[in-house]
Length: 436
Image (cartoon, rainbow, N blue to C red):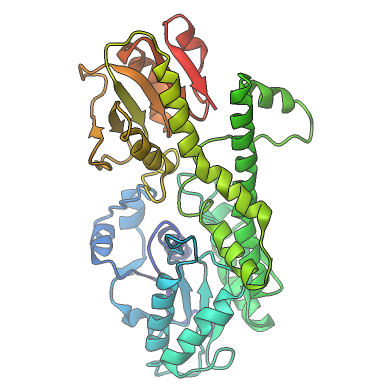
């Protein structure tokens, strides 16, 4: 069990975003006195009213929780365990953006320097995805500088990579294996015991913080590369006029063939994390060609789709309008997150064409593009479309798509990017269908 000296005071989750909020709620649910801290006052006020703008947590789950939500950083001062869950994006030059980690580390250093009780040395656990060595070589010196304390003597470090899958109710913190690591064996045991309260499937004790950091970053690199392979195969088969979905279906009959869905790769994880490892690899004089090649393929998909859509529609002989409707703007199905959305990137390309671009997203109704028209109540609107592009297949789009068929012009197109729709529905409707 967790040593009593480390549970007689609150733990603090620093950052209440997609990762921090569910983690904090889970600790509180398991009777561990928990503070949830965030510097965003709007976010704190919304959460205090039970509103999660990310639409990941139900209102009553927030309001009924024992979690203490605050924007006052003083909660850090006397806490024995501080868990950092801030985002780690990339810059416009595809380099790690450590600004939020830097701010969190400095704040922690400032606050733990004020600790009155020096007997319990704080344990600082990072969950943010980063490159191997970042926790010990980047964050620790910042904490030391601000606090005047020494890492491994006056405070201790741990790393437990987040495994949050946005929009996925099945793989939550309570039913996944959690990787944990610590600065030494004693700290590892304390961290392992702490996470055992919430990770009911168990914990995996990595032998070092660097190993844990590395394990996280390659999880998303592997997924990125596999999707890149299938995206590239789609591009090849499209040139040959061979339906790639049928190719994948046939190949999937082999026992060791792993099928991946092609499509737009956006968000804060899969298209971002590879650059953290490639950055560090290049520091060691190694250029990771495979990883960067996969990234290049996935980054090229919006342009490929744009060219495919425009070229295809230019061959439609007769049409009454130049209207194209793009369904979905978030980075993946059934989430409200717009970060690094490749659907938005596709729309930016489409608005540069001679077509009238309309957009809709049932998970987020913000008007994303000035040159595109946001359309609500599509079925009730009198506008018809030369083409509908299903860019982000939210469940409601899939289940209700048959209601939109009448909005498509004769000889018009459905571009079903991920191939989730039943193609047979269009065969007798004089509507063309294309998917990756």
